[in-house]
Image 1 (cartoon, helix red, strand yellow):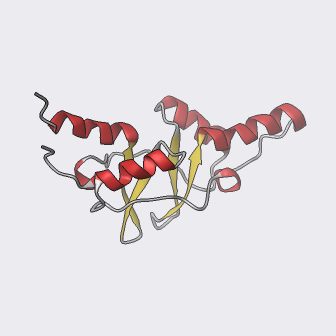
Image 2 (tube, rainbow, N blue to C red):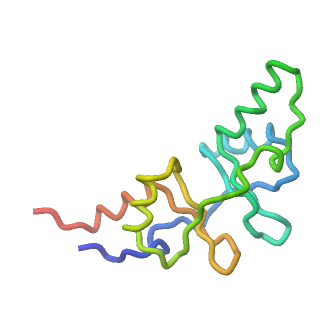
Length: 133
């Protein structure tokens, strides 16, 4: 039996976040340093305004290769319509969403504030609470 089925019990609250104004090259360096596939983008009020993924950064790489331009900022390349979840959501519902969406991670938002991140790996940690045999 699972200890709990709420996102809040499996999410991580220690997060690396990005500001919309920084350059994509700097953001990509931060993501590589922390071995992240993406990171939430927060405004000056700590509200989620986007998400920058490795895939988003590839646009800047191609722009540099083909046009010699690397001036993109995070706000130019981030995904603005971010799929999120709430800390009280069921991990079963979120697991189903992971199966449907092409996401590796969801920002967890409560009262318009980013409170954590939940990944596919975080959901898999719930298996340690399932009794087998």
